[in-house]
Image (cartoon, rainbow, N blue to C red; front, side, top):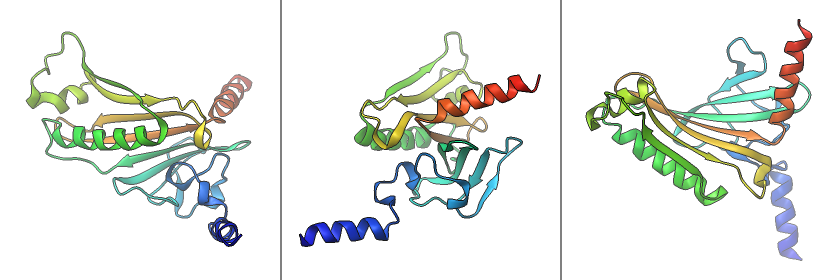
Length: 192
């Protein structure tokens, strides 16, 4: 009985976030739940913040997509930029670390690691340049079977900023993301 009371107290003190999803967010959350969040770009549904309820030490910015009807539909984390890494050693190491962490929670993801046929950026010293020229791919995708945390899909992607600098984007689409896309299509069609 005492253990049950302690468990209930933890849930109440955490405001229901004891079972929160990625970065401490939940599908359907509203914008007003988050602090220090600002509109990002032209789409008024996209927001950016440097803080989330459960931050991860490798990420410095977080992108949110909110549907006016369905609340939070997507959350992404962006790592710090990795500079002076033409060989891609540091970004590949961080990718592996994040890939392993996600695998331990959501199961084994489908990893894509290749360079396009005919690319001139095949040598190791041009690893990041190949990524920058969009001739090299290092990504991973998950579609959790048990729908843990209401997650529909997860993407981990390396992105080059220059020939020797890159970062990693980690995106979670909640199960209500498809409804948001349908809303967007309808709004676009209605504008014609």
